Image 1 (cartoon, rainbow, N blue to C red):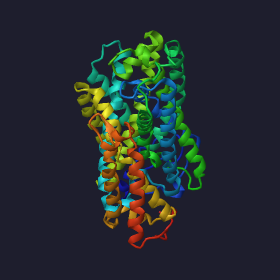
Image 2 (image 1 turned 180 degrees about the horizontal axis):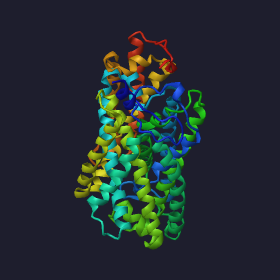
Image 3 (image 1 turned 180 degrees about the vertical axis):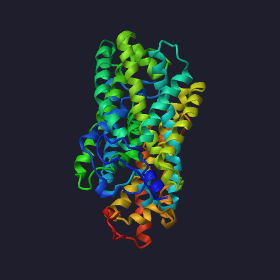
Image 4 (image 1 turned 45 degrees about the vertical axis):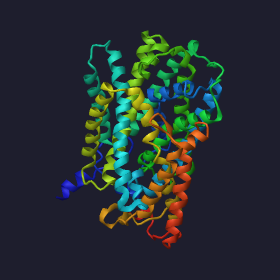
Length: 468
């Protein structure tokens, strides 16, 4: 029994140690911490170099937004930098707590963590499907159309799932080397696309302050989705890792990569004409196919594996955080298998409309969630009893956090602006979607008030995280 327990709780001990990470959501002990801070940059730079980012950039010039290039670029920059800053703050919690992000959310949510844990688990599968869709098409293009889509998809799923099964160190190592390869590949793609870039994109006559804010929100939502993953990839860092540097590397990695690909998509929008093809084919179209097109497809394939390995890994931790008792590698494999079916659903359905609806609708709850986690962390002073976090039965009710989450989300519904529903507040604001801001502010204030009303002030628990 002791041997079995040891096998189930294995974890990497140094860079390059590809021991299968059986360790679940327990805080990483200080004695098991390792890793260089520079890897925080590469683990966040690599997964944004994907067609989904390119597709978001093209939306700035779409008829329902209608921004010119410079206004669209400003919206892309502002949205991504704000979102990257939020993720950076959350990532800095990793070294201090030794915990992954959704498991650490047990602190405010208690037993109600079942709700955000399950929602994020489903979200990782959906993100898998969106990215794998592009990756499978890229492999199909590389093969000259000789590999059927389901087979190409299976290859992508197997690669990403194997990385997520091995776990933290395999993902960090892959992202590190893929960052170099993807930077070079997408640099070639960018240079090849230069002759087809349009820095005017018409006069932006359909643009308004409302549509500018809407594009800022759409661009920011792409990076904000990483908030739910933030400390997953910093929790093995030494306890004394400077929070400012963890924040900076996360901020730069996410901000630079997302802005680059989204700006590229925006700059070549006119060259795409009325193309309804997916972003993979659009990129191939812009660079003119041939050898450069082949390099672009290789980049897309690598980027897909990079981002989806992180989805599968975080999905495995989210399921455990929700109270499901299962070996973490098996949990990761389940996410991979389910994403195969979800991708086939997109393949045989309407991918474009599903992508646009999902991007905003499934991420609207992140604003309230992030506010609750950050307010709770501040009130605790970064200190907690690790034993109460690990044992689901010992968790508090968490009703204040869940109430704040629900209220923050519901109050923000009138500010929705996406194809399934446009709220009255968004209409009154000329299409501006400020859902994240409203949800964040309302949930954060309400949670603080509820906790203070319950008699909690600050640092209620004496045990420091390194007591784990």
